[in-house]
Length: 377
Ligand SMILES: *[C@@H]1O[C@H](CO)[C@@H](O)[C@H](O)[C@H]1NC(C)=O
Ligand SMILES: *[C@@H]1O[C@H](CO)[C@@H](O)[C@H](O)[C@H]1NC(C)=O
Ligand SMILES: *[C@@H]1O[C@H](CO)[C@@H](O)[C@H](O)[C@H]1NC(C)=O
Ligand SMILES: *[C@@H]1O[C@H](CO)[C@@H](O)[C@H](O)[C@H]1NC(C)=O
Image (cartoon, rainbow, N blue to C red):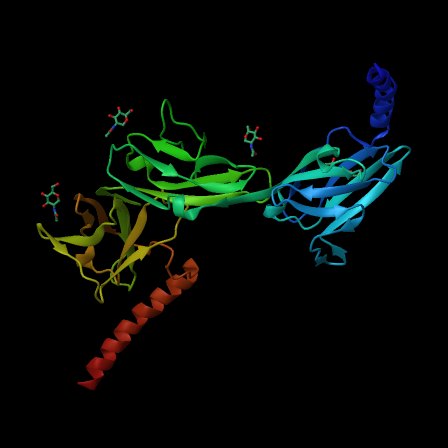
């Protein structure tokens, strides 16, 4: 029974040896840093003695370091290197901190700390793994994101907003004009999710929708989508009657607000006797489309104007702005009526007394001219 006696002698010794071997104490805390910043991963070893601590990148199976020397390609970053190992001693414990600078997305992954013990097989070396997460600000994937959605009335459809980022961003939908989102069970101002389901879409849902992808890494990404609903045009007037004085080279501006999709063709008529006659853009009339007046326009509305130049007696009649597309047509009426004084913002800004003087001198001038003509005969 000599071998039992040997075992009894050897076992405590083996346990003693094991206790004397190096050990990685505690967990290796996961490191999380935004792209471009510096990561620091710590491995703390007790009883290291003459053994060597190394770091290995698990995914690529590359040994990064052995003690303080870096064993892989280690480019300069500014005045420092991409990788560095810093050693800190605290009594019996030694911490090897792996520093990784100017983080890229591919630096993410698992980093294994190991202690090389020359007398022990590699499979028995103490090892522990820490993870590095490189955070990436969100980006919208434009290919998978709706830019313009055109839809018939009363259809069910959806807007998509695809975004990447680490961690995966939260996606929030709102309407640019602050309106509610037409979703079930009831409309809300804000919707969380990549896919915004739109139910029973109608004209009031036209407009610009905004999706924001946010993962707390600045800056959040934003995308605008436009919803267009096919429908017949509607017209409305700014003022249903406009006054102007005749015969004094004053002009009158009639304004009409138009909505419809596809964009309607807009024309103007004027009433002559009992008929409505199409107005063409000639010396007498200026037809204009004003594109930017966000204060007065609702989403998707357009502002048209008709300028009647040098208002005369026969210009005092009814005018109609008409809008038409393949879904239908609509028109609104504006009356031009006579006033004694100039109306609008383009009136001569003479003080009343000066205006009177001018009128007097004009009246004075007419008989003088007539006299002159009479004298020429
Ligand atoms: C590693 O240690 C350094 C210095 O003490 C510390 O700044 C860093 O946050 C630690 N890393 C982790 C992932 O805890
Ligand atoms: C749209 O969805 C609503 C609610 O689920 C349903 O009542 C309606 O019939 C759907 N409309 C169409 C055109 O599928
Ligand atoms: C997403 O939103 C939830 C709830 O507000 C929040 O707990 C989580 O941290 C957010 N995720 C990201 C990646 O920002
Ligand atoms: C306008 O629409 C009506 C039906 O709503 C149609 O009868 C008429 O022909 C249309 N007018 C024009 C100019 O298209």
